[in-house]
Image (cartoon, rainbow, N blue to C red; front, top):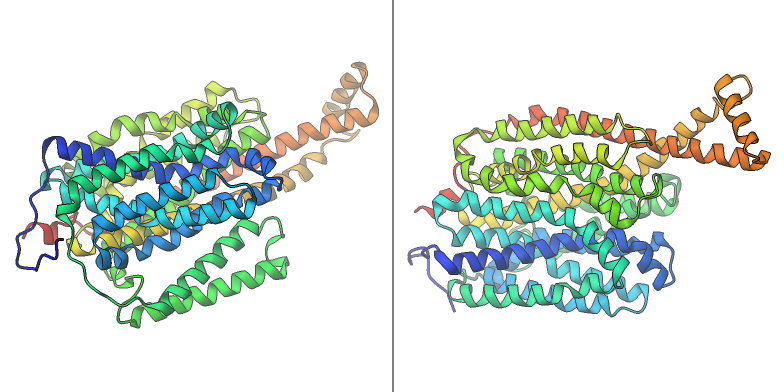
Length: 518
């Protein structure tokens, strides 16, 4: 195909209809991949019920997917160099579609978890390469817009996930959350292949670094498993969790040492010598950690404590996408006019303020009051994702964009999955301690409590019913105060991230500028 030697001039960018079609195809495949991380969240109780396992085992469908996806992301660079970017991308999309179908047809939990693992492995290279393919097909002056389109799909998909998942599960059956990937994926693959198969990148036969690969798989696998099951097993009090933690620590430490000295590393850690890459990835991962934490705990609190349905919890979380969706193209188009560090600082300040705003709500907050800060939060999203992508890619040659994109996506995914485990655990622990301290106020010495108990007895509730009712209230308030703590902690984290960002050095010229222009 396109084994073009170095001497050939770079390919001309696409224009007009082909460019629009390609953008749609690539955006939809990214959308589908990111959507599948969150669409299952709402359906877990249904899936667990129909496959006769506990909801805790049901969450394996979420973690097996993000685990396989996380492992494949840093490998993207190697796979793309070996087989060509276009071929890798299209194969990745088709594998994703194939295993989506397999997931829908699963009749047992092990079968579904295997399907999700394979689906995640297929999807890994898709996200990193979608960005690379877009950037190489867009004319230089429009790359900001390409970046904005891409970031928009990555941002909007997790927000639509729960709504779509809730709606499909409530109105059809859970296998349909997998079947909807079929038409989208097949169309995306056909369009991308038709437009790009003549623009294949050079392939290089590089040997695979087996030691690095094994360390990566075992290390990340144990880490993910530990995070998912830590809470049920009381964390490090359990020998299983302790063992997993130690294996993960040893493997990942050795992985770093090994990859620095390896001749053909699986993960190109030399990228961290680039100051902007390091600063960008740290800000992205920690920012994602706090942002994702809010997005996980918020719908959980609505469903478990305030009695929302899956669909309504999704709707309460959704307004965050409105401004993000509208502002992304504007931010992308005008990004070169401002210092990107200012943009991201503004995003972190808005995140911090809205998180703090959330931490002031009580359990009586109405749907309308909860929606307002979610809506305002949307202001920050495009100013967070789009400039950070530009910052960590700045100054890198075009040949390294696939690796850099894969590595930063790996840290972003890891940030999100660590966040899920940490935030849910923290929330439950804080709820227990708040419950304990609130219970101290329920005694005969407290006039408020006595009066309330008298009112309940006038309603004809027996002693045990009264205590159960009060316990329910104390529980609800305990969980709500715990949610407030989480939001408050996230607000502090966003503020702490502000100075980190300013270690990045301009110029943050258009991505891959180094090699593309020559």
